[in-house]
Image (cartoon, rainbow, N blue to C red; front, top):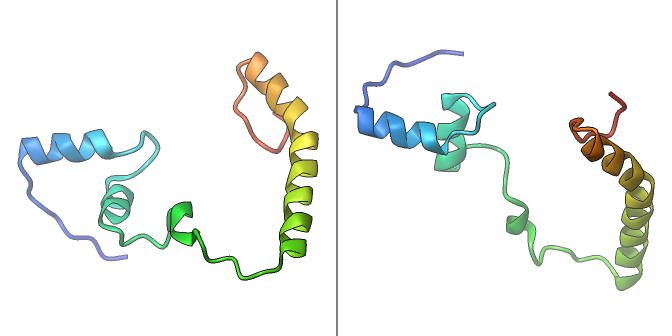
Amino acid sequence: MAHKTLTISEEAYSALASLKAEDESFTDAVLRLTGASNVRPLSSFAGKWHGSIEESKIIFSRIDRMWERYRPELKKRLRYGLKPGLTKA
């Protein structure tokens, strides 16, 4: 991937740095903030479901079962200060 060098003021750098996530590169921050990223916010999908009520009941039922399995592991990880995740530490 090609790179470009930009000159920005200290004020602009500080503003960008304050908006950047801790584990995010400046490139990723600029792409996220300008909407150039392929990642879309979940809210952008609101109202897009065209499935039936029965399909949505099945999906939510499966999500509920997933949370029932995951919740005890999450509680344990939070209790011991471990990073939440789907795999064991």
